[in-house]
Image (cartoon, rainbow, N blue to C red; front, side, top):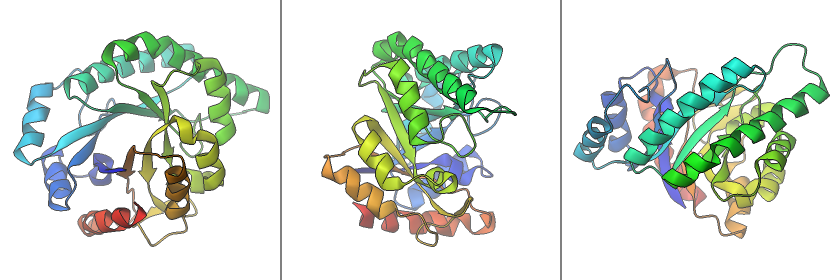
Length: 263
């Protein structure tokens, strides 16, 4: 398994400072936060050569591009999200990244079980529509679960992939912290979604709050051990969204030794 870190851990830092902290902590693989209108970069508005130069100066490479989310509850929102994801996919190819990550937008109000299933299936159809561009770039998508967002549980994933199909370019990012927040059994997630997994966001949570790795209730070791049984060789990517951001550099420095023990 390969270790990486998402720059979202350092979302209050500039990109240059975030990359310096990640390199100083011993990481070489970087999952770049590229959420439209937020941090750290916006696809289509920055040169890939500039990003590559920043990484090369620190001995880093980009393992993935985190492109934000997709909302299938609203057609216009979905179109805009897909257009941005396609732009981010171009950036990922230019960076020689190994995957592109995005999650779902928040659930709409008044959600019913039938509406939930319909939204998940629509996300699957959107993924299927992306497939020609994924094939052209030869980069897999790694759809990520998020707490209280479209694609939250194992069943949500299953509905989506019933529509999307079985292409190896249609994969998942298992976010252990968000599964903890949503009350999802990590072993069930690994056993059911393991063959599709190309990336794991390693987080630690107490209830819905992200905390420093090794200080919460998320059983990362169990999930990683289950993936190891099927020969998983993808990424374990550190994500920290802690409340005590003033300590984030220390938490990032402590993350790699914790993650090394998982492998």
